[in-house]
Image 1 (cartoon, one colour):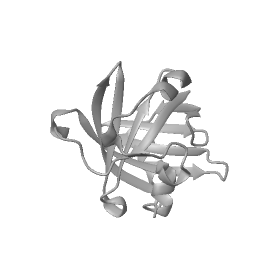
Image 2 (cartoon, one colour; image 1 turned 90 degrees about the vertical axis):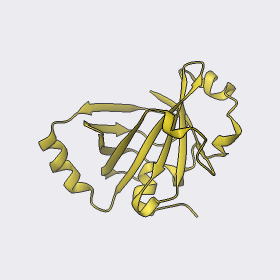
Image 3 (cartoon, helix red, strand yellow; image 1 turned 45 degrees about the vertical axis):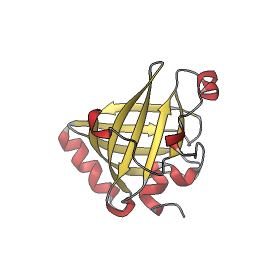
Length: 154
């Protein structure tokens, strides 16, 4: 299970370059109308196939490692359903980390930030720092699958 909240920051926080980051390319092999997805992802040299249930505060997620040949074959099926971003990992304390995504290509200029929680109670009790901006948890327009297909929300 994945328990996370999501925001749209208006600007990059100071000191971003001091934290760990990685380039992420992900494409969607299959999307269903209920919100489930099958995606492939390259995060630096790590290749995965991920199956997720519909977006929201809590969702089921299963990840499987891929070999380069498997990734390449599946990646070819994702044309027109891709996002490219740099993910910055910013520690918040209390064992929480902000995953700040800075998008490229057709999503250039968009920022999103997610925090994953150990429980629903922890997610609900969390008071976000102001720089995280407007909360969009559960707003399907900001799900990566929608960004890949529909572009930036208006």
